[in-house]
Image (cartoon, rainbow, N blue to C red):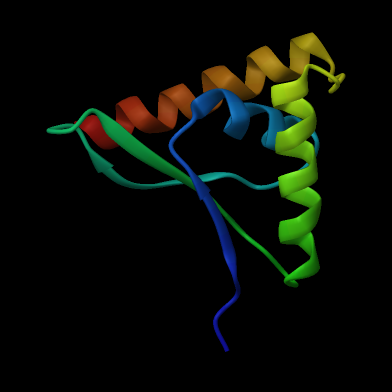
Length: 86
């Protein structure tokens, strides 16, 4: 059985999710449309609700994360995107 996934094209949300412990991967980089897709493979469907609640907090400005870890995860994801570009 295939695991459910959460997908987004937003590198900032992806960086936040990586900072709180999710393993974020880059998939299907399509530079003709300047879009990359970040995805998280979930162990169980209930995790999708947790991620959606976290994303809602992100958009509401109610999420607190370690700024150094956030910046580090952003740079790591950006590096993966640039690596896939070549």
